[in-house]
Amino acid sequence: MEEIKLDRRIDSRFAREVKVKYSLENHNSQYKECTALNLSIGGVCIQFHRFDALTIGSKVFLEITASQSSTQINVTGEVKWTAQKEYKNICGIKFDEELSYTTFAEFI
Image (cartoon, rainbow, N blue to C red; front, side, top):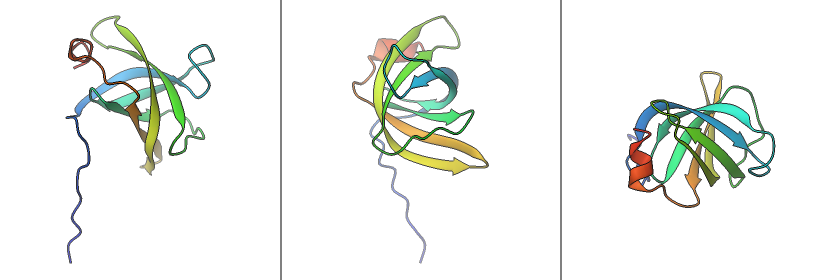
């Protein structure tokens, strides 16, 4: 029997490699670099350049910079899933508050 995969995402995702910095502590602590693989108004999928102890339910503080401009936003979110693909650590983060469409447009 063929397995059916349901896409539970509410918002459309756009594949964009965007520079991201993250912290597990708060916005005032040391940030570590990572890369967004895709982005929506409600969340982001990020790839880590090194292993970090992110678990489902972890609170994450993100600093996202648009590649086309110097626009930068600070958001908080929760890790919803983690995976390792081709020796790369990735995770999905749901933002605590959705981005405005105006802000989101600067990133796509």
